[in-house]
Image (cartoon, rainbow, N blue to C red; front, side):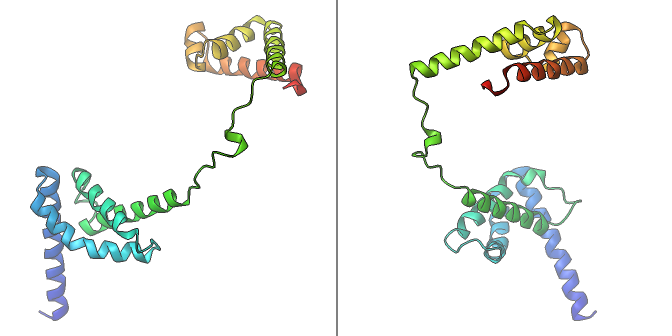
Length: 193
């Protein structure tokens, strides 16, 4: 047996041992087995995460999230689909992506005018009332099948599927009538919105 053969056998034995440890964690929540897995992968995951660009000050968080997920999701590990290291590195990769997604989101600027609600003025209220009356008048002038569907959808808050069931109509018919009604409403109201 050559040195390469010995390494291959010991590598396979090591992989089998890791599988047994993770299965023990999955089935019995065995903390001692998890400590061994953690010790095996902590530094490897740290290097893996650092290599992908996570800052030195944040790498511990990603490693911790990875290992917590490994503990939590151990029952979902399927030894027939791959080795323990592949499974844990996949978790680490996903946690790294999560880290970058969280850090790339800008913090909202609450002083931005889009966050400030519009001030209710008599002019705004009058305009809103006029628009509501115009829409109601337009809906009332629709063919009765279309008006009924618009009312059920917008005033009663029913889904297209529920409307179809209530009216014993095919879903496609409900959607077609809604589309026609909305086109008519839009053409009647047009630039008044």
